Length: 618
Image (tube, rainbow, N blue to C red; front, side, top):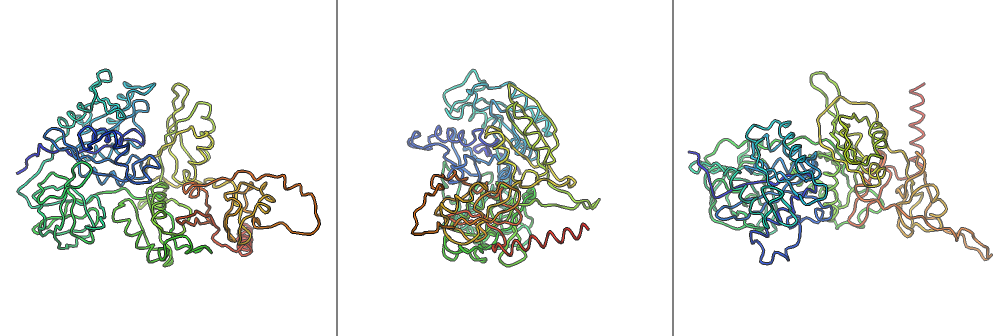
C-alpha cells in the first residue's frame, strides 16, 4: 500500500555553469543554522574538491540536508557542465523535484537545456528560480518567457509547464515571489519547496530495495554507497543481497548505515523508505546495483547514461625521464590499469578498455573537459603516464552502413565586431549555422558542429575574441561523417639532444617560433620545446653552449633578449598535441613529446611516408 512521507523532500539543484547553484546552497545552509558562525563558513562550501575551487565549477554531485520547520530537505548539488552529465543523470534518480536556476541576464543556457530535459523525462516537479535579479541589465520578463518556451520545446507536460517561480539574490541569501518584493532571507524558497515538491511515495510494507547512484570511499569504513530507499526498512547489521547489472546475486550485511544531516553523514540504526541513505558493508559495489532484502528477486531499473563521444589512449610513461617525478611504483601498467578501472565504478560516463599492448588503455568520455579532469586528478594523486591526442568515436549506421560521427550544438556569444571572424572559423570546421540574433551590441549564434571540429577549437576561439567571447556546447547526436577538417596550422619545435636548455642556444633559434620552456629546463631528444612558425616540425639545439676561447671579441648577441615563453596548461597541451605526439603527465611537469624520440629515425619515417603517398598517387 503506497503512502507519502510528508516530513521529507528530495530535490536537486540544476543550472548552467556559473549561474549560482553552489552559492545558493551556501545561503540555505547558513540560514538553517548549519553553522555556529555563518560568517566564518566561507563561500562555495560544497565545492570541497580542489579542482572545483580552482575552476569555479561543480564537478562531483554532492549530498547535504537542511531542516525547515518539521521538514527535512535533502539537497543534491549537481554539475552544470555537459561533460559531467553522467553525474547529473545518476542523481536525478534520487529526487522528486528540482530547483532550476536561471541567470536574470543570460536566461536559460545550453547546459540548462541538457539537464532540464533529463529532469522532465523523469517527471520531476521543477521550481524555477530567477537568480541574480540585482544584476545590471537584468531581463526578468524575457528570461522567464525564454524558460517557458524551453519547457514547451522539451515536451513538458501541462503540469510541469505550470511551474512556480521564485526570484533570488543567492549571494545575499534573499528571495521573494516577485523581484520587487524581496525579503531578507530565503523563506519564500523553502516554502515553495515544501509546497510544490511532492513528498516521496513509499511502500513501507514491501521488502527493502535501493538503487546505488553514487559511490564514496572512507579510509576507515571502506566503500560507501549512496541511494534512495524505494521501499521497506533498512536496519544496521541486516543481511541484504546485491544484484549486479549482469544479474549476479552477492550476499552481504549492512555494517554501517547513514543519513545526511547538514554537511555530514549521521550514523543511524534504522532508515525508512523515502530517505536518501549511505551504507557500507560491501567491498565491491557498482553504480546501478540493486541492494535489497534477500527475498527480492528482481533488480530495480538501471540508470541509463548517454554514451561517450571522445577517447584518448593512456599509457605507461616511456620518456627518458620516466620514474623521476611520480610516486615510486605508481607508474606501472598494473597500477595505472587498476586506477583507471576503479574510476569507472563511480564515473559512470567513463569507459576504459585494454589497448593493443599491456601498457596502453583506451579511455572514453563525454568530452575534452571530462577526460582532462580525470588526467589532472590522477596527476595530483602522484601518477605519471602519457596520453595521446583526443579523437572522436565513430559509429556505423546499422540500416545504411554509413559512418556516423558525433555532433555538438554550439552556442556562441560575441561582440558584433567579431561576428565575421567566428563565422569564418566555424565555417572552416564544417559548422552549420542554425540561428543568429543581435541584442545591444552582442551577437548570439547557434551552430551545429561535428565534435571533430571542436577538438582544439576553444583556445583558438578565445584568442580570436581576446578572451571576451563565450562558447558553450551540448551533445546533439550522431550524423553522417562530413569531409576533412583542417588540423593544427603550425608544427613543433623539437629538442635535438638531451641536456639542459641554455639561453645561448635558445636565443640562436628563437625567431623560429614560440618557446614553451625557460632556460635551465631539462630536455630530452624528441621533446617539444615550442611551436614552429611554419607547418612542419623543426629540430632545434636549445642545449648549444657558447664556444670559449682566449680571444676577447665583442658579441652583439649579448644584447639580444629572450622573448616571453608560452606556458601551456593541461587543457592547452591536450588541444596542442598532434597525432604523432604524446603528452607526458607527471605530478611535477607536463611535457609534449614525439612518439618517435630519435630525430633521425623520425625524419626517415616522414620521408618514407611521403614516398609511399607519391607512389600511391602516381
